[in-house]
Length: 330
Image (cartoon, rainbow, N blue to C red; front, side, top):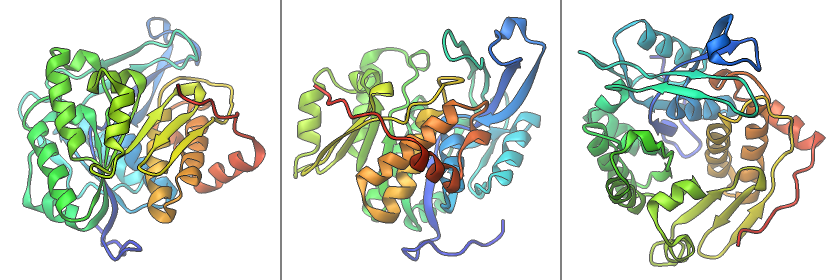
């Protein structure tokens, strides 16, 4: 790995992203169903990989904490990370029967079917190492995706790194990233998510995801943003925008209206740019605006990692379009 310059804080990394990366296949032509495909195009996908690419495109120095299988699909992911300038310095190789995730994702704005193969997923074999713990002490941010909590050893690795990050002044972001088919039952999911949320400075999710975390979202937001906890809660509301809650601020924002080509990838683009811009300026409204512009760009294009926008594309979106008026939540 080539050496990297220090971040503005003097640390090696702007962010470490913990989560899955895999192979996405998109049926051709656009608008068609997988069962009727004439062929497929390939891209890197997976929430962890996508967020890391979004941050790299925005200008962050970022590394992915994950594991891939020792096969051609794992090699594909590693090559794409290099292409997108995301460091693989901490990317582990999972041996045996574990395999890198595969997704078949239709490019359709509605009735879009996405099939994900995660049987014995390689990324869930992620093992805690001293190198990863040291990297956390040299990073401004640790971004964690909830699917890393599904099973061991990834679950313990994730929770220990989150706690280690808090102890070493590394800002912890938890993207709930809930996928119901990955979990045995609500009780188990809630217990693990609640534990992870305790270790996070910022918790991000949509209403469905927060419903897994708590039955009383209003009360949870109120308690989490109190001085005793001091957490930031970011509620993503799709086409209605986002609502942010801190100890001394509530912010409701709109979206950039675009013609959507597909419904996925927006959340990863949003979060990657949000983390990058907030870390640089500590201005929530500006950071959410950048994240929202990035999300709009990604849903209007084919692909996920390859669709993550440059700063110039985000600026053009912000200059050429007006965000829809914010819709207050409750």
